[in-house]
Length: 120
Image 1: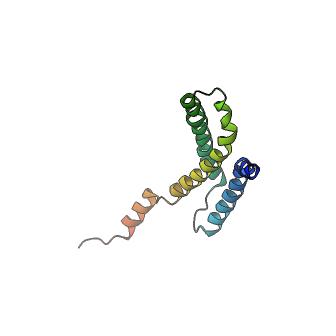
Image 2: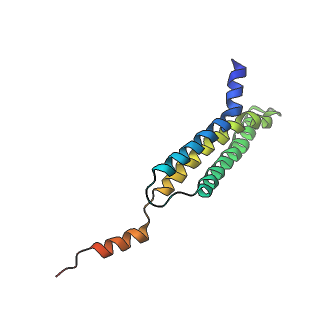
Image 3: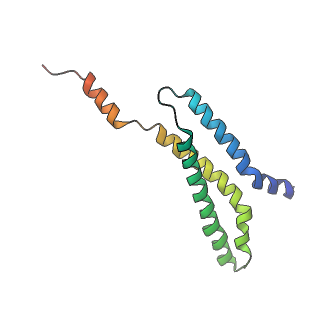
């Protein structure tokens, strides 16, 4: 049982990466108009994944080591690192999607100006 949980934790970034790629291509196929760029998606996902890994490394591993006064807890990053990458990747995909659906204010403002009625 413990071996299965450990295997799932270690390989969680692989399953998450496959899911995130599928998510990107589904969003791309359903998007009307300007298509999202893969590089923008991957850079946002990578930024959040590395941020989560650094957070897990500094806060969790070092914090737990200091709290419990155990010297070998910094090696816990090998356990906490892969799930942190997976969670960071998911957070990056959510952030990317949120940024992608933001309306473009310049185009929207020009369209409203051109279609507005003029007062008599």
